[in-house]
Length: 104
Image 1 (cartoon, rainbow, N blue to C red):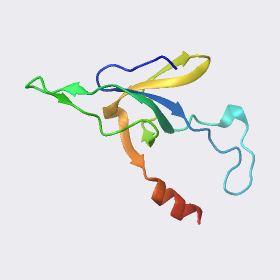
Image 2: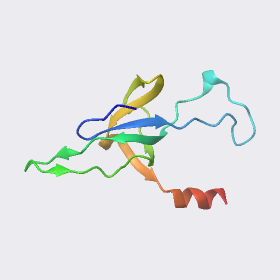
Image 3: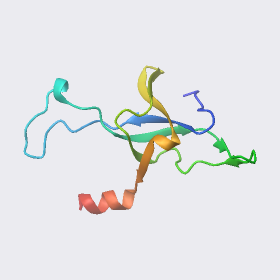
Image 4: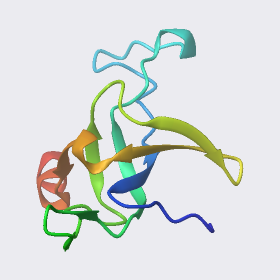
């Protein structure tokens, strides 16, 4: 992919929502909400502070994140639906260690 976000923007791929509820009910496409979880594909270099210094972003490519329901702008790059958003739209990073414990 030949796309590089500018400033404090990040490129995110949504993680697919579950097809079934916890009770085993299959959810049709029309009733599904768009997931608020995604994987960071690319990040910009960072924003500038009041002194003009570059402040690096806290997220990096490969991080799993949670973001707001209406966050970002939907774009299509190389035939793939992605989101471009500012780092401030990210609510948090999902740690792989916590996710592995939950699965076990």
